[in-house]
Image 1 (cartoon, rainbow, N blue to C red):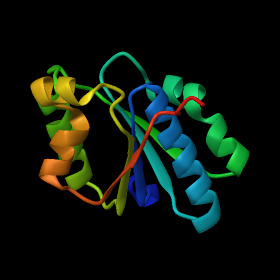
Image 2 (cartoon, one colour):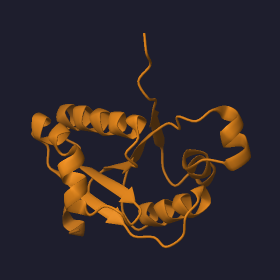
Image 3 (cartoon, rainbow, N blue to C red):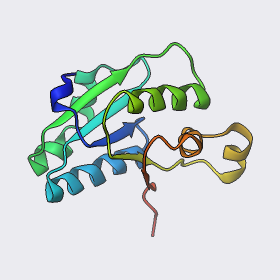
Length: 136
C-alpha cells in the first residue's frame, strides 16, 4: 500500500458481524469528517481484492476512498494477532483504531483472552469498539 495515501482511521476486520459494523461506522464517520480509512485483515486466507469485494460497498455508498490490506501471519492466537496489529499500527500514522467488540462472553475472554483486550492493554492508539447488532 502506498504510504502517501495512508488513512487516519484503521479498521481491523475479521469477518464477524461486529467487525462489519465497525466498517459501516468508519465509512459513515469518514463520509462526515473527510478522514481517510484503511481496512486491514490479519491472516492469510483473504487477499486485499477479496477484502475490497466483501466490504467495499460501504465506502462506495459514501463515496470514500478506502485502502484494503491483508497482513500475512504464520502464528495464530489472540496475543500473536494483537502483537502483529500493534506493530502495524506503530509503523503507520493512525489517529483511531475501529474494531468490532468480541461476540464471545466474558468468561471466554477471561480464560482465552481477546485481540481487543490485548490491544487495549498495549494502547497503541485510541480504540473505538463497535458492538455486534442487538436483537429486539
